[in-house]
Image (cartoon, rainbow, N blue to C red; front, top):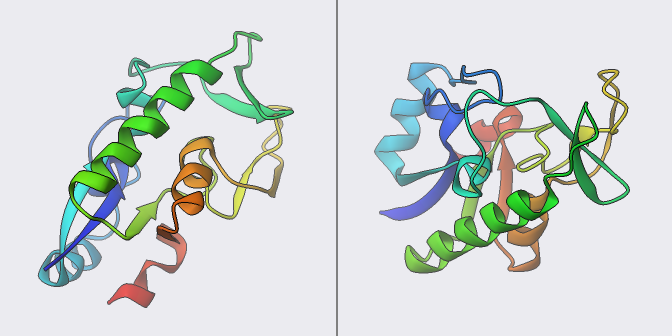
Amino acid sequence: MQNVLISACLLGVDCKYNGSNNKLDDEIINSLKEKYNLIPVCPEIMGGMSTPRNPVEIKDGKVFDYDGIEYTEEFEKGSIEVLKLANVFNATIAILKENSPSCGSNYIYDGSFNHQKIQGMGITARKLAKENIKLVSEENVKILL
């Protein structure tokens, strides 16, 4: 079976900034598990962030929380750790949480903390894409089934 990275929050791990998750429907998770070995990752936790934590957004290529504290270094570290796992497991696909400053593959929030989305990629998504890892958001995960 092919190894596939997946945002841990999509599997129900409570690693989201507010201490909750973004769990996919059990039917989708079970269908994915029938076809793939799922490797859960959370770049933010892997970069040293705590749960819960302040929400963060990307502004001018850097990561800040709404208090203006910068977390770019933690996000970069997490992206490196995720890429290491992709290499160890020879994963060529990553299922990532859309809109996330780490995992957004098509959209992220604009850095204003006003719930405005823009086209863009999170820090980890960008790093994985540069390594030719296919990015699939939870919004179109059914293409893998």
